[in-house]
Image (cartoon, rainbow, N blue to C red):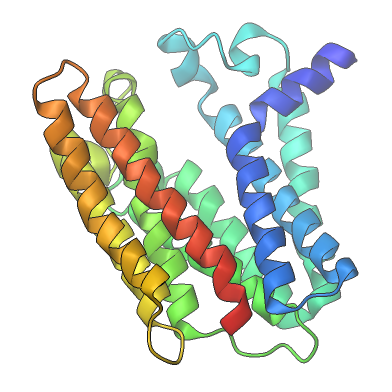
Length: 276
C-alpha cells in the first residue's frame, strides 16, 4: 500500500502540482478570500493538478516505456494502470464538486481549465495547436479564483490575458528539455515543429508579453518595480543566450533564463491580487 501511494504521488508530477496549487492559494489570499475560500481554491486546484498529472502518465505509459523513463511509476510497475485510471477519475470528478462551493460560474471556469488540460494530454499534445490548452487552462485559473469570491465578480481581462500568456510561454519552456525524447516517440506539438531555437524565442516573447500585461494592466501608472520586471524580462533571456554562446550548455543556459522570467511573472501574478 505504501509503495502504491508513493507511486501515485510521484505520478502526479508533484513539483508542478504543488507549485500551481501554492500560486493559486496565494492569489486567492491576495484577492480577498477568507481562510475557507483559500482552502477551497487550493483543494480545487490540487484536484485538477492531480487529475492532469495522473492522466498524463497513464496516456504516456507506452511512450515512456519506449524511451526508458525509469522515473515514471507506471513504467517501473509501482502503480498499475487501472489504479491510475481510477485515481484520475476520482480527482477529475472532485474538481467541479469542490468548485461549486464558490458558485456555478467558478465551477464552470475550474471545469474548463481541467477539460482543456486533459485535452492537451490527448489528443492536442501532438498537434500544431498544442499551446492552446496551456493558454486556456492558465487563463482559467485566476478567473476561477476571482469568480469564487462572494458575489462572483468579473475577473479583470488583463489578469486572465496575462495568465494565458504565462501558460503559453510555460508550454514552450516545459517542452524544451524533452524535445529529443518526444521526437523519438512521434510527439509533434508546436514546440517540436518550431525547434529548440524557435521554442526558446516563443517562450521568451510570450513571457515578456505576460510581464507587460501584469505591469500595465492594473489601473494607475506602473510602479518602478513593475517597470524593472519588464526590463528584466527583456534582459535576462538576452543575457542567457549570450552567456551560452561559448559553452556546450547553450540550451540549458537559455532554458534557465526563460525560467527566471517565468518566476518573475509568477511573483507578479500573485502580487496582482491586491489590485483586483
